[in-house]
Image (cartoon, rainbow, N blue to C red):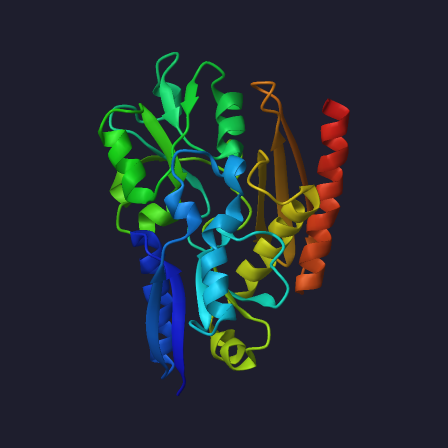
Length: 302
């Protein structure tokens, strides 16, 4: 038995995720406590992440806690984790994925197709903006920041006709009933890592890595490694309208990626490919291959 402290953001969803990992480690016989923290990403709510520093704003304070020995591991929503970790840190574990798709949430309209012309939709994801514009160029898309409960309250207060959220977060918090429509990936391709939990540790903590080994879900780890490789090659920040999603079909990993042009309302470039994948190296190689195809397709379209 070992004693571990988990660093986590203090939103309700982040705490659910940390508690989930805590329970699994306790089942293994370990003594586990949580260290709740507020990150800059949680504090800055009046500007889009792409304008104030990107995904790293949600993990920096947690990494400091690891570095200073206040925590042994940090639990993240993987889509919030930068594609390149700072020196000295590693992504030790990726757990089995929840639903990776995007969800439509609205009090009055069952689907995006039902919205009247010029309706207001909330999202701060540039990926979702590009894909929504491709579906409905007439919509007025407004920024939406804050934790899950805050976003839902803004919808319920009438600031938007509907909002787009990750299905995984709603399901984890027992809010699946709020979902009016789950988007098929063919119309709204998810973000790299969406729906998966990643656990970050200091690279020299082999004891923590060993404790986490049984939580690794290899098919998910391989899929998200390919997705994150696409994002890494493309520039790896939330200031890009980029989607990447991989699923296994037998032993082949089928990877799709999309890039939206925010200057052209309906311009989205799609590429796809599949390869047999059994190792992280093979997954990364597929992701890099698809990213190069996407870069070529974007150049051709521009």
